[in-house]
Amino acid sequence: MKSVNIKLSLAENVKSFVNIVNRYPYDVDLRAGRHVVDAKSILGIFSLDLSKPITMEIYTDACDDLLADIKPFMA
Image 1 (cartoon, rainbow, N blue to C red):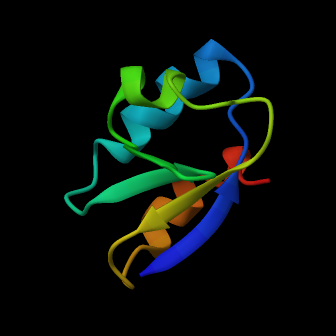
Image 2 (image 1 turned 90 degrees about the vertical axis):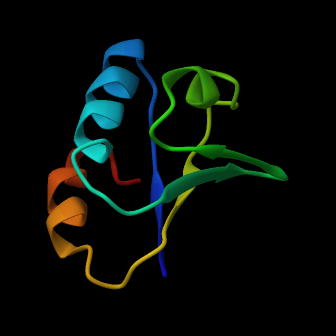
Image 3 (image 1 turned 180 degrees about the horizontal axis):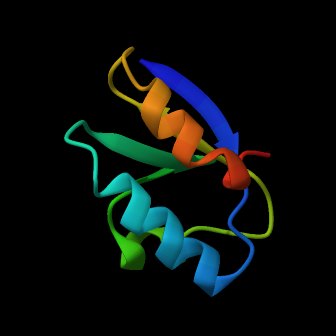
């Protein structure tokens, strides 16, 4: 499992982020405080506080391709 911090400040960023994450078969969650949502769910992401960085948890170690794709969102 890998964890990285991301920043999703605009609605367009959320849409792009979800489209990228949905291309990969492994599970990805977003954690903001005690709230955890599926990173492949637009509605779930909008339920989080997007004003500060969010922790993204990727449930595989072979995720270099995903990390490269989401580089613009990394905080």
